[in-house]
Image (cartoon, rainbow, N blue to C red; front, top):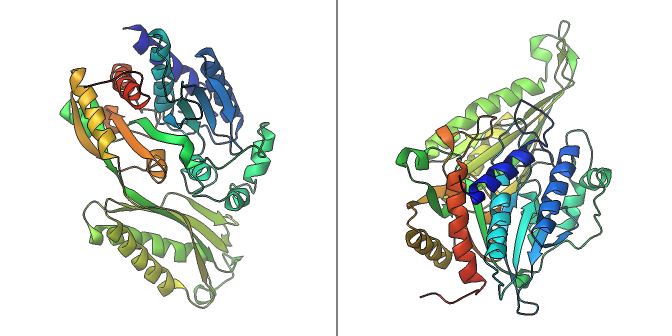
Length: 412
């Protein structure tokens, strides 16, 4: 094992220790105690690598290697560092560590970029605490307004600003990032699927990222005693929600072409075994590689909801996130493939079925993305695993690509 691979393993392992569920996977929710521990580790590592460290008013972390051109736009490289509940160690942190190790290679080779290089560690990509997902990248690019950010609350009623204050973050710091300060964005991520492993190929060069939308649906009914309320006098919020949820998979199946729909969260109130539920709140996640399929499913979902909106039942639908399918920048795709070939590292083109911060940054700058294989195609579980050797190969490709983008030296 070379030094690069060993450092990657050590850092991913270190970050994985900041979890609320030891021995049961990684649970690191945004603005939690574990978030604070991980961000202190990441900031210290950035300083160790000679970067100028700052946080923005959302809690995103930036470590900057200055370039020789004054006030030039930066090449950003990184990913997120939050997790789903009981998730894995690689989803997100692998990309942050990859960015750090690209900087390490700059230092080891005594290279000075013309354009600055910034390693970024983003918050709330998963949406596990405040919903919607991609919050850090959407907020810094202005796709999520400051006002909407302030109004977000978690399932305990804690707001983003309250949660930030609890771990000592300063929400008054600068927030929206001027797109003119960004030259490009690169991200490494685990595939979270089986394709690369099945092909025995260590690198996937991402061509497009699936479009996605997420809704929160609230069904309001009327509470009542489970034993004394006749069946024909009930306005049961959970039964209505269950009827809607049961039909959602068929909406995606009918649309076809890889369209998927998922109900991921379900909360029942008052949640008593002998009380008819008065309110049920659930989420719907819809994804497709083509925007028309997403729009079709949204239309059918609204029809389904309207059908169940009847006397005694009130249903409200809130769209928390909408992102169109995104193509990665053709020039950066070509550059990543060329560097892979030069380094004699096998690669293939691949599309992403998961949403990533890269699709948000693609709204404001040129973006490229690499995947590394996921063992068994598994992600969002404690069993999630990717080989540090594959990550090291990706870092080498990113290093060579960043050298070109920061104009360290001329290439053919």
